[in-house]
Image (cartoon, rainbow, N blue to C red; front, side):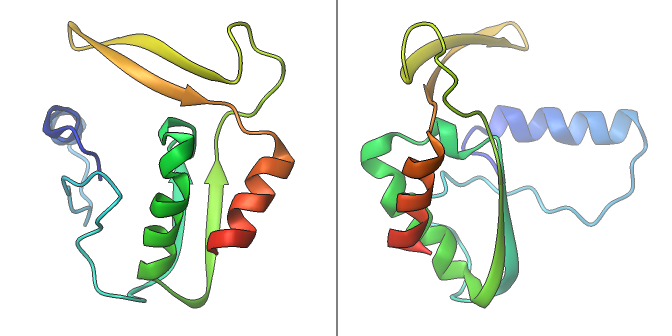
Length: 122
């Protein structure tokens, strides 16, 4: 799932290049309004996602993830964390993908911040 169709096209292209066979569905969504019924998944994995959600919207995002996961389901978060990075905890970074420039929001959570967010939403 990605909110940029161009990223999903790249994934589909790479899948064809490597002749990878899978049952992966490519879905365009920003994560704030997931196109799934309530409690449909056993768990969720946020792999390098949460740091790119603006802090003022993180509760909305996490509530939506929680909505689609079954009661007593699991959650795996893998992401960056605050280690005193230059330019501070909240940043705008520029990335180049496929010859195009993108501005990317980045927030480096401290463990206690992430714990509080999960207590509120999970």
